[in-house]
Length: 299
Image (cartoon, rainbow, N blue to C red):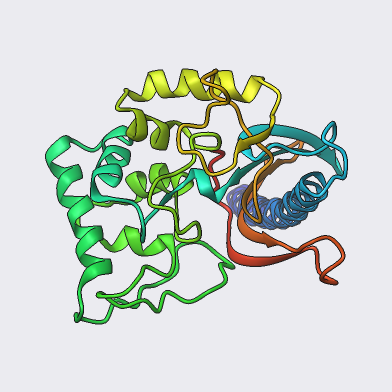
């Protein structure tokens, strides 16, 4: 009899342990699902906050008075939206290196400033020139990098690049290099030489033949100065009366970078190239030319 009771007690203990393990697994699974749902909800909120940053940028670019007008040279603007801390920067596309118009020498300089060795940078610049200059060639339809980007990668070798994503398909351009280059290049300016009034460190280093550290110092100084009407009017040097580097108030095509961070650390980013409408000429304040989300780096 005592042996039977001991066996029964042992069985009860095993069943209790098994049930406890099952309940712990269910609790962990429920907690995991709850955390995933919470992250998803916070990511949606962060994405909406990043879009709110774009709306603020458009309003700032169209502000009627210069005191409140945003300067599109990459300087950061910060705001709070729905609990998110949002950082927004706008760059006039005239300050970016146009993959379809810039000379191979300029592109080579941009690639070197991004950390590519001189020989590889020369090969990459030649590859870009060959891509856009060939009369014939194989199909170059590429997949999309990033979510929600408008415009299909339908360009072919022998024609202009349709999106900057096509740069990522060239030999030697890995994900890390593309991430460094993406904020510095465009296909929407049509300029063979970027305007230094709006250029970032990579482009400015290439233009002036200086290293990236020197270019970063010049860009930081420019972003601390007030913009001047008349600066950035197409002059590649970006200086007013032989003075220091000064930004203007931009043109009609701007690139907006917006990154939102929630209190729990969840982040979402938006990188949109837009064409501003003339005041009162269109019901929509802007038209989207390019749209990419999530992994966005401020210029």
